[in-house]
Image 1 (spheres, rainbow, N blue to C red):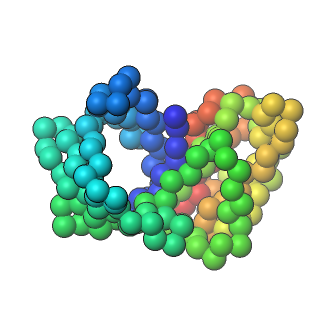
Image 2 (spheres, one colour):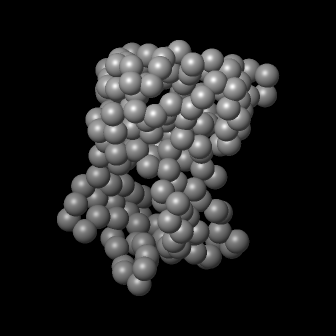
Amino acid sequence: MRYEIVINGARRSAQFAPPARETSPVTFALDGRDSTADAVRVSPGNYSILIGGRSLDVTVENHSGAFLVRVAGREFRVEIFDPRSWQRRLGGGIELEGRQQLIAPMPGKIVRLLVALGDHVKAGQGLLVIEAMKMQNEIRSPKSGTVEKLATEGQTVNAGEVLAIVS
């Protein structure tokens, strides 16, 4: 399964392979780097994770539509977006910071560009339209900024492929 994860405002791409058995390690890739981890739920919201030969105690709390994760004396705000589910991201009042990559939620074709490379855009503004399974979906900017990279009209894209970068 592929997910888009925002950790303390930084957008990351994660892919998880389900374990073969309940006691099997979980295989995952974060930004294309493969890894495995063993995780055991100790109690609700508390986990023991073994990754790279290192044992970590992790606490997870649901916090305002995201997760507050504490590990090794550090705290992270984590938001998880499943590209298979529709989510309205407009009007939330929260704007992401830093350079943001917009990723294709599914395979499709770019049928229309709504902005040009170098244009200044506002958070929530439509950047392009992708057609997948005979449905058109407008891809919107997660932040105000400048369009640094943009797919081309007519381009065929795969799920997880970068469509645009706004910085």
